[in-house]
Length: 294
Image 1 (cartoon, rainbow, N blue to C red):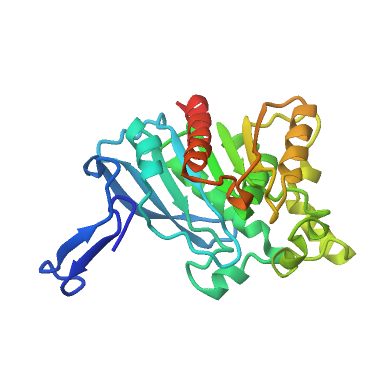
Image 2: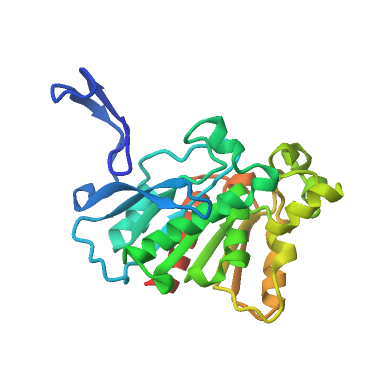
């Protein structure tokens, strides 16, 4: 068994009964006794109930002042399940932050239909779901716009790019990791051609008609105010490629908005070649959000 507050633990006994005894567990990296986990549901634009988990201090004050990190992915039928993260615990929760996982459509939390509900022409549903969770957190006064940040990587980086361009007024800051951002040319770059079943073919006029609605690079506007954003990537990312983050950061800066950029020269799509680099990249994202949301 594992969860947000429990490292992977081997139990002996019958599930659901108090007689089950823990035999051994992976190391703990933070004091989990101070926190609690709750699952809630947000109502998306089309009325769909979207689940999300909130990991927060037990004595959380609902005054809208809590630095809150909202994380999501929403693609390729990948489920974001409760799991233990020493990095989140040490770098975010232990400093007083709230951590939220949004189980938006495009993922696999409710099986293939949950994934298929956000494919191609329906892609915007994933982004509407994520925005709905953000609105719910604000409505509950868990946080407020100046204290609410978002983070995601790869397909989740595309999610972050769309949070920047479609919902800029929701966020105090965004961290966009190893992202996919130029949907006009993605199918001709790196491994992009293998993802057309997910997003569509931008070379077909009928597909580009809907793809352009969620292509962040094409949707950045001059004269529009965007929240501060950090782009991270790797020179050796052979799945998405560093050019996506490079050109998006340049465009955001060109249009007069705040953007930071960090490119590791190693690491592939994980943007880190070893544990030391991975720790640095994680700390970079958490510190960026903390500085802007605290």
